[in-house]
Length: 392
Image 1: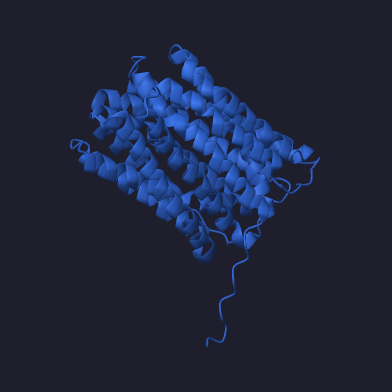
Image 2 (image 1 turned 30 degrees about the vertical axis):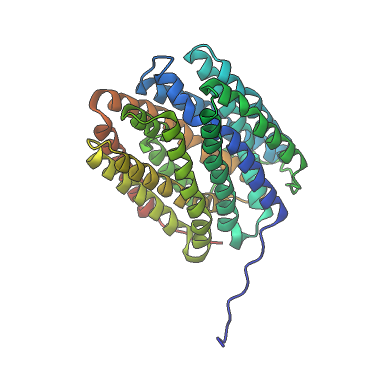
C-alpha cells in the first residue's frame, strides 16, 4: 500500500452542476439553430461565405463588447443571478424568431440579439462558477461546464436532424428551438447560485494580474486567427453535403468536445493550466495546417477529420483558460475579469472572421486555413514566451 495514497477528489458543488445543466439546455436550443443559419444565408438568401463571416463577427462583437461592462456592474452590485437570468431569457426569446426572418438583415439582427443575451450572462455566470469551486478544482469545474455545454450542442443538431427527417423545414426546426429555450430559463431561475459579495470600490478597468493580461492578449490574437465553425459548415455545403449530413457531423464534433473538455480541465488542475492551454492552441494550429494541405480533397473523410480535429483542439483549452482567469483576479472582481477575457478576443474575432471570409471567397479554403494556422501558431508562441505563474 502506498505511503501517501491519493486523496479523493471533492465532488463538484451543486451550483456548478446546476449551471452545467443550464448550459446543456441552452446549447440544445442554440445548436438546433446555429448550424442551420449559414445554410439559410448561402442557400435561400443567396449570400456568400464573406457574408456568413460578417454576420458571425458582428453578432459576436456585439456580445463581447458588453461583457466587461456587465462584469464590472455585477462586481459592484453583486446581482450576478439577475444578470445571468436576463441573459438567458433574452437569447431564448429572440432565437426562435430567426425561423420567420424574411432576409439576411433580419437574421443578422436576431442573431445579434441572441448573442447580446450571451454578453449579459457570461461574465456573471463564470464569476459564480469560480466562486463556487475550490481553487484546486476550477479546471474540473470549468471543464464540466464546457462538457455539458458541448453535450447540449451535440444533441441539438441531432434533434434538428430528426425534425428535418420527419418533414419539418429549416424554418420550422428553428421555431421548435423555443421548447428547450423555455427549459433553460426555468432551470436558471431555480439554480442554487451562491451570492458573490458586491465590491463598491471595484473600479479598476482591467482587474487582472500580468499573467492574466498576457493570456487575454494572446487569446485575442488566437481569436483573430480563429476559423469560425460556421466556415466548416460552408465547406461541407459547397462540397455537396446534405443539410442532414452537415447537422449530423456538427453533432458528432460536439460529442468529441464532451469527451475532451472535462478530462482536459482535470489535467490542467494536475499538471498546470498553462501547459494545457499551449497543447490546445498548438493542436489548433496543426489542424488548421492540415486543413490547408487537404483543402483540395473535399471528401467526406477529409471534412470529417478536419472538423473533428478542430473541435477537439477548441475544447482542450477551454477549462484551463478560464481557470487561469479565475486565478488572475481577486474574488469580487472576477465578473470584470471574465468580461475582459471574453471581450478582447471576441472583438478581435470580428475582423478575423471577415478576413477569413474574404480569403475563402477569393483564394478558397486552402488559403483561409493556411493564414489562420500561421496566426494561431504565432498566438501560441506569444503565450509560451510569457513567464508563467504558480497554479492555485
